[in-house]
Every structure is written in structure tokens, then in C-alpha cells.
Image 1 (tube, rainbow, N blue to C red):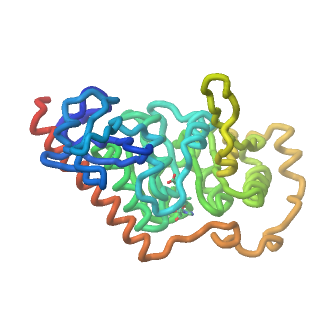
Image 2 (tube, helix red, strand yellow):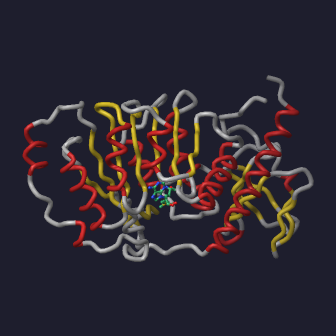
Image 3 (cartoon, rainbow, N blue to C red):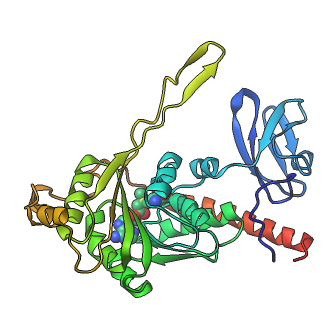
Amino acid sequence: MSVDLRPSGPFRLGDRVQLTGPKGRLHTVTLREGGELHTHHGVLRHESIIGQPDGSVVANSGGHEYLALRPLLRDFVMSMPRGAAIVYPKDAAQILASADIFPGATVVEAGVGSGALSMWLLRAIGPAGRLVSFERREEFSEVAEANVETFFGHYPKSWQVVVGDLVEQLPQVTQAGTVDRVVLDMLAPWECIDAVAEALTPGGVVLCYIATATQLSRVAEYIRHSGLFTEPEATETMIRGWHVEGLAVRPDHRMVAHTGFLLTARRLAPGAMPPDVRKRALKKPSYADADVETWTPGAVGDREITDKNLRKRVRDAQRAAEGARQAAGDRSDETVD
Ligand SMILES: C[S@@+](CC[C@H](N)C(=O)[O-])C[C@H]1O[C@@H](n2cnc3c(N)ncnc32)[C@H](O)[C@@H]1O
């Protein structure tokens, strides 16, 4: 089977299409033989989309028009089924730059959650890279795997999902000193820093994506006092959209104000300790573990999903992946390698 990595050209069977209909309402469909989109405005037959160029306008039985576009990755992650909270596209873009994710890199990620960040990482490392994603909760990994398969239309060969705790599993799955980059998106990243330091290659980058200032402070102090990394750097990314129409050129009234902070540091060579790292590592942290009682999702304002709801998300994601698998099968019948 040939894998089509270029999401372009006229629409074909099995493509996912984002339709913008009357009043800007969005619908996402996967093109099927005999498929139809039913709304109270009428029926839109998938046949009227197949063969049209990306970006076409198609009409339904009631004469209502829809703009048809293939979803970009940023559209897909915002509408896919979620188990856990996702990394938003603005942060994913910044993570790729700050963690210096490059084609062919060996990258470790935890937790995998809904798989949003995994998709950005997989695209950036390309087929020559390797991404190992760790996830404690099996249902979350199922949602993530189904989402990734739906988006790419196949299960990437460069991807390995490991169900279990990063601290226990990382030494089993990777050799010490061989991992180029590590991205941690979890409640308590400081618990993983020793294992990450062991896995990273000298000069490798660790990046933590954290939601609250208290978590940021704790992981920064942990990294600093380990004496194994360069001085950690923290950033926050805010993107403010602009309304640009005629003379009405101004910032949008609304924006996503806060998602998370990024913290990066680089692994020092074994035994190396530059003077600034030595000085800071020797200083006592300004608070002890006992100062912060328990790091529970509730304590940092995370809303936890119910088991019932999570099982439904798993089913939704797997149904979409099954559609993508069937579509890839249909295409391989049409394609000669
Ligand atoms: C916010 S979610 C990750 C979202 C993901 N980055 C995305 O973009 O979809 C955090 C996940 O980390 C997992 N997790 C927390 N600590 C972990 C650990 N030590 N090892 C593996 N997974 C962990 C949780 O189960 C949860 O699914």
C-alpha cells in the first residue's frame, strides 16, 4: 500500500473535508460512496464534492452553499475527540521551535493524552525520526492512537506508544544517553526529571509544558538543583488575533489568554558543571515538598473526565480511525505502487 503524505489535489473518496455552511456552521465529513450530509437546510451529497479542487464551493439540495476545505492539522486537533486536555496549536508551534524538534530526531513525550502534540511531533521528525509516547492511562492512549490514525490515514511507523509511567518505562524502552529531545506535558513533571536526565543525550533538550505558576516554579527548582541541566528558561505564548477590514483595523475583542507555560533546559555532559549551574545548584530551594501538599488534578484546577464520558470518547475516536483505515484500503485498491 502506498501512503499519501501530501494532503492536496482534488477531493477523493476517504478524504476528510471541513464544510463551512450557512451562518459559518462547521461540519467535518469523511467522503464515502453514496455518503450524504443531512441538515435542516437540505442534503449535501458527497459525490458533489469528490473530484472538486480543495477550496471549492458546493451546493446542497436546498441550494445552500458550503465551502469545502481539507482540515489543517490545527483544525483537526481542535475538533477531534479528547480524553485529556490538549496542547493548543499556538503552544505546539512554540514547542517545536523551543525544543528544536528536527527531522530524524529521537523524541520522547509524556503523557500522550489525546495525541494532539504527538501529531505535531510526528510531522516534525518525519519518517526518519522516532517518537516514543508514554501514557499512564490506557483509555487515553486509545483515544490518541485512534486520533493519530485518523489524521494520517495510517499508523505512523515512526511512532511507539507505551502504556505505563514514564519513570518506570523510559529506561526499558530507550538506551541511556540516546534521546535527543523530551517533551513533558503532565501534572508533576519534576517526578520524571531524573529518568529524563538519564535518557537524554548530552546537549539534548527537555521541555515541560505546565499549566500553573506553582508547577512551573517547582519543576524549575527541581531542574536547577539537579545540577544536570543548563539554567531553565520559561516562556508563555499569547497570540492576539486582529480584525483587518477596511479602516477597521484593530485587535480582536476576544483571545485565548492562558493555556500553559513552557520551560526548557539542556542536558549537560556527564560531570560537567558550569560555574553558574554550580552556584545555583548549591543554593537551597525556597520551599520544600511539604509546602505543597498534594499535586492532584483538582488542586491545580484540572477538570477530570468521568469514566463513562471517556469510554464514549474512545468509541468516537476509534470509529473515526476505522473510517480512515477503510478509506486508506479503498485508495490502495485504486493506487499502483
Ligand atoms: C494534559 S494530558 C497530555 C495531553 C497531550 N500532550 C495532548 O496534546 O493531547 C497529560 C497526560 O499525562 C499522563 N501522565 C501524567 N503523568 C504521567 C507519567 N508519569 N507517565 C506517563 N503519563 C503520564 C496523564 O494520564 C494524561 O493523560
